[in-house]
Length: 515
Image (cartoon, rainbow, N blue to C red; front, side):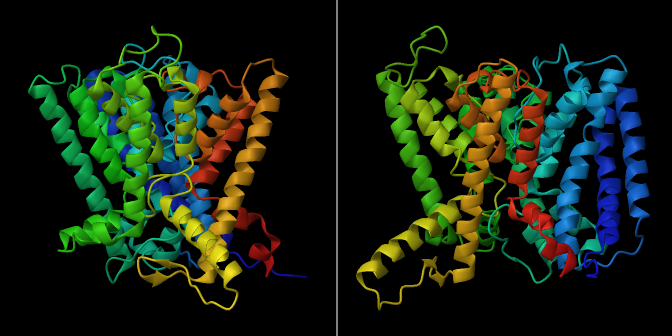
């Protein structure tokens, strides 16, 4: 009889440690709740319950020994557990007589998972301070900021018990085919990444509030100036405004664009630039491909909007931007960057765009940001390797005796890494296809009208952690009308997409547990 090879108690104990320390973040909205006189009992209770859960799980194994297998299990369970405990403010707010939409467990889990995985899809039908407290909306923003660089990466940076084995934890969690070790110690690398992340967040806060003080953004008050950087840098896209970034001036939209681009860039490049190597940006193949794709898509969409073919048939649905170059360029740049980086903000309702423009945005949902960024989807580096390996296959078909390694930035990409990239890309497309069919069937089951295009966009938006889709799940709408079974499926897709599929699927193999 084969023996269980995974110490699940160690994994569960470390999950408890992470949850226990994560509970401290609930004190931030608690302070806000006390200052505004709303939802204080909600966050006080949520804090107490989260601490209790963390301590209880930690006692499963007070002195855990973390190996590679335990690392995979710990990362997957951490993201699932964090999303579950993140539902408590939503559920408790309903219990204490507040917001009712999120009081349902399925809706609360959807919103919490969307927050921590930085997806930005929402089931909140009415997003406003008239309906929700400052504290609840701030918690919603804060979940994305915590999830952006990674819950486990943050834990590795601050918890000494995770410094041993931290490299495999970061590899299992970090978006992309791996994370560059910037310093001799992995905990130091984690701190460097989080400090860069924090720095960008603070700079954006200062600029946005500066626009408000200068009179260029009247409704970008202090709360909004704090809230939006918390979801820009994690490429999350939650906004306390129902109309997303459309609610603000053109100046705000132009300021947010470079921060979305920065969030989708490999953070290691910023570290190298600060250490006297700014030329790394020019030499980096992935960064050149990333900016090139954004530039080309922006130019095409801007042209469609400028000549009027990018706008749908209902002129009342969108601002009249035909013939206005700055408007066309701004909306095109903002929306392309937002979708490619999987931020999910909207500067206008792209639901009203014409079919060519919408299909371009659907295509952009599969691109993703750079490895080592906070962006989701397939990632630029994978597409670069796939295209280079396809070109090699064409070359070796003509020259079968030739040896032609795939190179990325002057370095040879190993055949094992190429196989892994192909496996991930294939699995991603398989999950996308199967989930699309399931959403179409499930919505048809209850008589809810969803077109194939809308179902595809909803799956691409949740699996790729993009956020808004088309149709009823568009940028100015929500996922509320989908049946609960579909919302549970999309919650699973968000979790699967954030962990990049393989760390989750490996847990389902007998070899992982027994041999």
